[in-house]
Length: 411
Image 1 (cartoon, helix red, strand yellow):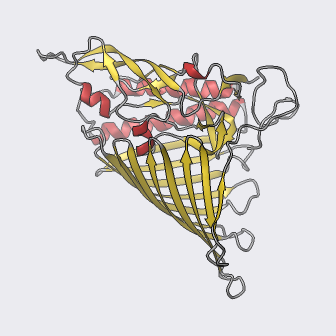
Image 2 (cartoon, one colour):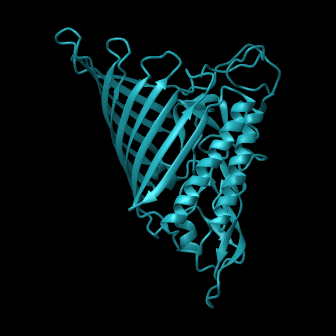
Image 3 (cartoon, helix red, strand yellow):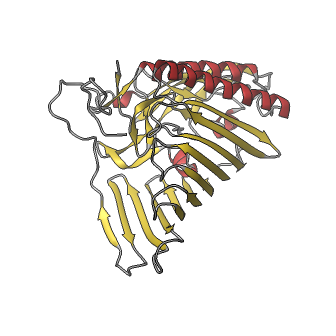
């Protein structure tokens, strides 16, 4: 049975409480743990938008606003006040702040990512010392008439993951401004990966559509190395079996600067996508993004090779650039589909597209250099979830399931 949770959008506000180290001003003293108030901010917090931690849709809109997706974090520089407020460590708390989604709806995806779940009774995970705590809520979506159905497996997995994370953070907690030595950092990463594997394994036992996923990240030599595996789902068309390796370099993280960014490279091999040969194969991507205050930019290049895909879908390469601001975002992408065995003159097919997102909705423009056609431009109307036949008030919106009589878009 699914629990209805109202969809959260970019303009919804969250606020609550947290725990933080406290050093009094003007007379210094050893750090102590004190409660803090998490000041209300919108989900699309400008600093998080600029640095890329805010996850929101661009083509699917709910009540004219972007919906929040899984993996969302409001970002840095979140206002918070310890009690009492004369805290010398406030600058450190601001640059290290976060406000993350805990529960995600596995059965409903918007713009390819699972939908985030948070409301007045379902918390987010707010940053803290020595542990993060689930004490930040989103009350502004309670009157929204669009819901997703969160399953028991969604809640159980989130509870296991959150409790494990809190325990690991407490176990490896260090004083303000300190860093863990490599061995302790490695141990923390391994325990975090095991916790994620345990949570997804329990979800898989409850519902075989859920994949078993293990993702480990290790920091060494100023870099973050990642390795993730996701497999075992009974629905590999929507949850393909794949392995991903990545390396990331971050600069100015948590050192008091408002500016920050990262450069990354990743490679993914997918061996089972439910028979969709255009998804099975190798994908690689390199990218860089950064921001100063509420303004950010990004650039990326990617390549794909699907050896068993139909002709014209085997190879693809693309480059893209984008700019994010509090008022909206703009991006451009150039894509080339490469097929060496195609007839002469048809080995390469390219397109160039641009997109602008504003609070009133997205607008796109696309042209085909190969045909010399003029750019086509569309101003996309806000897309709300599809309207099903009449159903009882408060019905849950999610993909149709066998015998469930519940409505929603296909995954």
